[in-house]
Length: 371
Image (cartoon, rainbow, N blue to C red):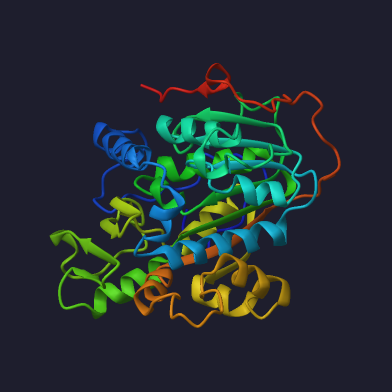
């Protein structure tokens, strides 16, 4: 795939005749190697090992207002593009932090997929109402299913054939983990496209490569950041140049206080956009988080949501609000929306879907990575 290539048909699978790009180190990554799987497991273990926080611990976080801002961004995305009774596929669902957002959108069915078994277990107990944070919460109004799998390596279409098609697919702050190789990036998009209905919507958030590269080039060395985050590139990027013909495997180390401490990968968005086209996914919009916030905070219903979440303080004038360093860290991310080509009947639902309102451990499906 190259920029300016002739557009393909809207089928979910791209033609095999398409030229493939190489990873940044120039190696062929058509097949997963041990180092790639090791890094994927390292990321999974990082998120899986993070313990659930009490309300008091959460409020004491040095990035609590950034977390609330990110929740606002995801809430706005869900409210903008989700309709009542929608069938939702949540890739990299984590511990189920967005379950309440989907419930408020009155969706009809939910499938969550995550590579980390610890996160899936936390998501299961959260859905069942067995965690302290939502112990007094009413049961979720939608049936759900959970799958433990690396959705950037394992095809999901057969496992979810009785659940598809989906009206909306969400991947929040996680899609960049697929860009360690072209094979993983393509599998991620294949899973999205093959499971969305024609006309279905793909929403997501991920690091903004343009911002990260700009900050890298402005820095004196290969590390930059502030009091709440830092990013560090290896010596191989001393020249701070990245070839568009080798967009995969551009790795950096990312640390965000009380949130992230693991390797990540740049996603050049113009390449991502063209790759997505091969899978019938057309860009609706892409906005940096700052641009997204500045636009939608002007709408009364979303301004009220921001006030309730408290990302910018609660209006009491006590000075507790988003810090400048948190606002700068938020600038590292972007928001995107894509739509699968074709027309589909959003009211046509698959009658074979399961109707679990309580998920037992044995109900979770585990899909092993291919050897």
